[in-house]
Image (cartoon, rainbow, N blue to C red; front, side, top):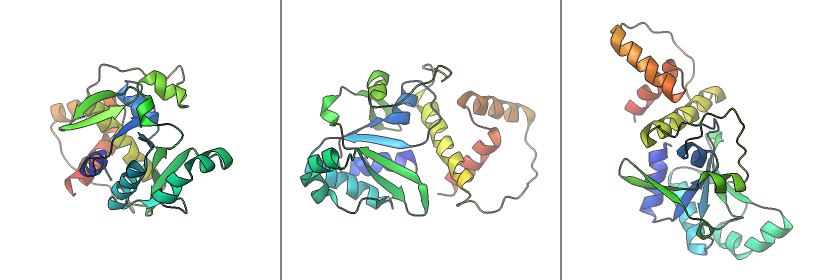
Length: 213
């Protein structure tokens, strides 16, 4: 699943949502190297149903033993007695790939920021609210507020792909290939890859995988 797939699924079900966690930090210009996706939704039954439908459509599975109706009906009991703060969906083929729904905060409690990405409007928390929800920013975290939304999301997408490679689930054995590339093109490609914080070899793999979709 790509981020664009996620945006389109939420849009198809008209799910009001905003990104928190590391993705929100990145959209605020702070390069947090955490590929987890965390989302805030409105705390009502319809939103709970929409988020499940959206993620099931993308092939994710609900990790809780209850569905949206029971979860919402007994939400206070789950939060207060069981300490449940999140509702997690995971890729059954790659269990490290998850989408986390915050159920301890209501989207309506926050003023969100917006950016446009490939005609899609993305809502996300500001950095102060993201930190209030528990994200820790270390002093050495790069602050690159000048980056475009496209580069930020491309870097985040690359990071997610890089973590998939680490899981050694999807790509199988590697094979060394030989190819000739004009030096100015290769230099420009390396410079842009370095700018967004990924090895240029990894970016080549990302482009190959995206082209096959």
